[in-house]
Image 1 (cartoon, rainbow, N blue to C red):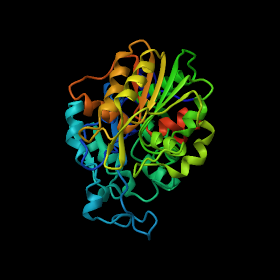
Image 2 (image 1 turned 30 degrees about the horizontal axis):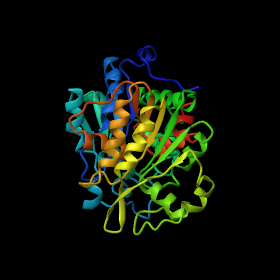
Image 3 (image 1 turned 30 degrees about the vertical axis):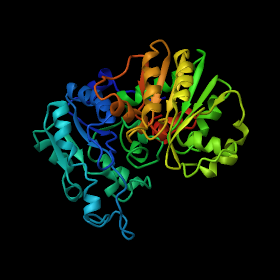
Image 4 (image 1 turned 135 degrees about the vertical axis):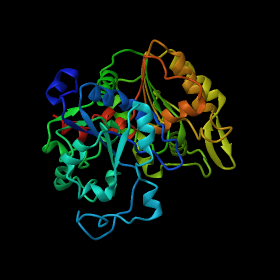
Length: 389
């Protein structure tokens, strides 16, 4: 049974320190002010309101570790080159401070090994601390118990509020729960409850929208909902893959060739809807066409349950965002259906295509998970959630 964070169970931790796993995995060149950051703020505020210090931890990107050495200490794990330094979490300090209206103390990688952790936290006036990129440390991605124990020294209890990486068995997600009382944060709780609701939904028409890159990553969702859903609207690379499997020449378009044998059982099924028209750039399909948008939008408008993961095309490039924009317009216009939208690119597309719009209505849940959402909706057990039970 998962223990969820609440004001009631926080009473016993007043004056203590929470080690809070969040997700600040923002790609280089992308705005740091992401939806994932906004989504975790309620948990941080709840902890502070209950007189709990907070040590935040996250990973970012894929730093290059040295081949030799096993958690030996300072400068032994990763190469301090420019590429790795760009993946530091230090730039988030000022942004977090602005969001929570409190100063945030950054804890550099080099100091984290030599500090007396409890003394360091007690002596600082700040109530919020941010550890350096977890992937700078050897042992994080291998779920090493020794690294989990090392992290546990920074807190009195642990909270996982990083649903987006809970499908990974990393030390800060799984191993750490062996050493501290562990809870699910407010964001993780919302994710589980909203995804469970759509997985058990019996409200029809039930529509699943599949776009983005690899179709193989989304086949689990198609299989899980195959008997339950009424329609599957296919766009992006998955559409290219289906069209090629049907014998269409898709030129140099992005195709998941390895997935072709896996999708053969779904070809010609009435539930599968493929683009009637597409938009090319040279020999590459980069978006669905207006006829497809109109047909898909009509099915979305009459749906009562909707799951969407993956944009319809290359929405970032001028002239190829109409497909995704059309889907969003239909989604936002359906105020009665229970809707779950996930995937980093899908959520990013809302801000890109509708920069002045606030968050969507209460009937639409924006999941912070991409792979985690897909795995959960495929019926898989997520290591980060299982570790909390």
